[in-house]
Image (cartoon, rainbow, N blue to C red; front, side):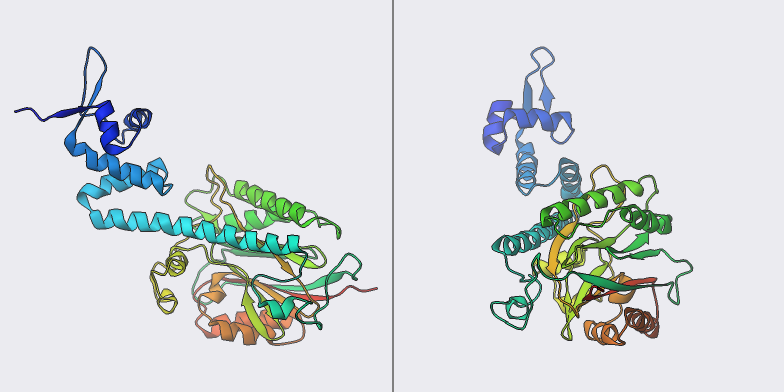
Length: 378
């Protein structure tokens, strides 16, 4: 007895997919009809195709790209656990991108409110209304400047140096290359950023954010054509009173203020996304073999990744650190804090951080930039 067939209208009602969507999925090979009438062109679907169609509809509701939908559907029939992992990985990326936008939204809200509160630091530490000892930055305030140092170290295991760094009067950057052309990728990304002009002291924060985001897109273009290679990038523009940050990957940015170390960036890794989603205990993250699996990086692909952006108010005495995971992946936060606080000059602190990574085995390349906020001369 022949299997009952559903017309495209009946199938659309059963799966809650429009006829237009069904034709599109047919063209892409995701859901071809079981039979097409050779004379009328009418499409007919088998009842057993309903489950696949509903799966496609659900995956599209969580904003999964069609290419990934196809892979999940292929896995569903032969490896359900693999399909589940693929869905978890996709949702982890969605959570990571949402968290990055949430951080930017919070910093913009504070900017529009006209406060100097930094979203990463307790309000009482930075809000002049709650702490009268904290100076409020304003156009009339004397400008501050950065005193910087940069250190690169290959470590004790890797045969080559694939990290790159830059420390100038207005631009700080570190990059950690990966793949066979990782060194070229990191150098190209940092080199592309070096052409960003210094922001004017009166520049609007939004304009500085846009300039930095455009520069990151240019850096992504600079690594195009490097087969199976790419780089992380953590970069900051100095405006004279605040640091504007752009971040992709698992390199990091920190602030040392009044002896307290605050992490300003968030790792764009699968493991961090699982931690954020509550599916992994933070204490277990460091021991995961896939802890370095990146969700975002510069790889010269067709669609440039969106960097995590942030704006951080500065105070004289602040010390900033940008570093690659050759340091942050091996050194506990407290040891980084102690090493960063060592020495009155940025170069002393940078040397102490490299020594710390080496003392812990030096398994990877290290790049670190240390920048102190100091009153401008004259």
